[in-house]
Length: 395
Length: 137
Figure 1 (cartoon, one colour):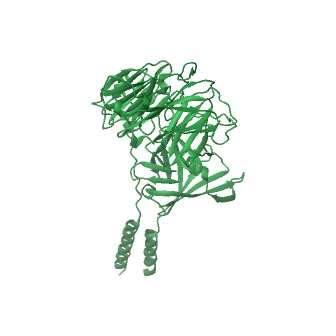
Figure 2 (cartoon, one colour; figure 1 turned 180 degrees about the vertical axis):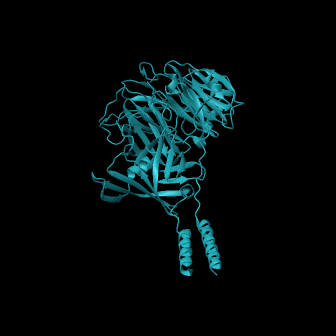
Figure 3 (spheres, helix red, strand yellow; figure 1 turned 90 degrees about the vertical axis):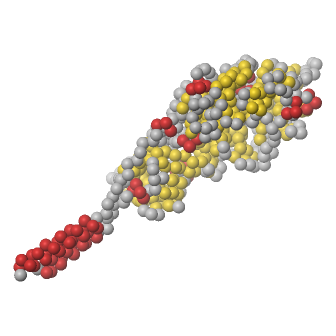
């Protein structure tokens, strides 16, 4: 009997042990895989960087990247797709690199506009990847007046979107031309009618009847003073900073003079207008880190909050790429993505590994699945899926 | 003897069925989390809690994220004001490592279940314990 009870006890204990084992919860840890190195840094666009040049600006037409380096205009085909094995690097046109022409060259869809000489602005029209037509715009001067055709421009790492000659509504261009007293200035509003485009490679002149003269004067109670020239276009209007004044000029030649700045017209407040960008229908001006914004397409302005987590953001240049807002710093290889929360901008620094420390970012252009960065030290690219990798997880 | 055996069996059952507090953090953290608030505990010089308050910390949102998305692989997405950024991440026990390209933040997961996530964020201040609370969405 005792032996039987002992067996029963042993059986119960074994059953209990089995139950215990069966009820134990299993904890499993998954080992995370290391990030793929090829996705962890920017890559050099070697097919272009073999020339070792300073790259000032870039643009995208079709699946090709257009770049400007040391006075030469290049295009690289087939860069927007997977890899660059069939990338073709071709010198299109030698451009006069003097007279600060570099900062004045701007890329738009099928157009490249640049200040070429003391008396000419060149407008390239590029209907195909390896062909271009060329306008040469030479203004008519009035005897006895002073030319102000030549201007001081911001370098491309200081300004966005362009700095001088943006293309408005697809076919309008604006340039200061001359003055009698350095106060009232004549601008030329040029309608670049494509019907005047000549055959590829042969320079032509636009029809001068398509040029409208626009008289521009400082706002009441303000004075003009020589300064850098900046012009951007949004919502089919030109926004111009000229002679320390802010103007809005439309394609009919109507001028609105804001004064020294858009909020306090008669008080300068060190307003320096070299960066403009839009988020939806809201328009922004960045002036030395002081942000102004307009909700009525640039007709009236208010001051925005400063950049919350980077208080000393005076040298940031905001750049819109595919509805996302990025920022660079003048003279730097740093790249930031910008978020907006209420009336505040927040900057987060992105991984810029692969872009050499001594580079100065001059432009950002997306072509296909890649984002390209031009710098004074070459061109670099990264798959857009990895561009927004943070440098520091928590700022 | 029967009573002894019964008690032994009951103990085994009790031990066997005891709720295990272990959390599979790696699996449980996967999903979308929205920042709710922060709990800030202040300690006295003896290390004892003497004040605790809960706030919505706009600075944390600005410098971290108002939404976090952990995918099942190794990527943590941060969402704020229309922009999405990311780092890789790794969970080891209750430590969450967020790895940027140059810096890594190591946070303690102090609470994680199907609806809430609490992360202890290093403040470099011995008298303040900072916890960020997120809710699943």
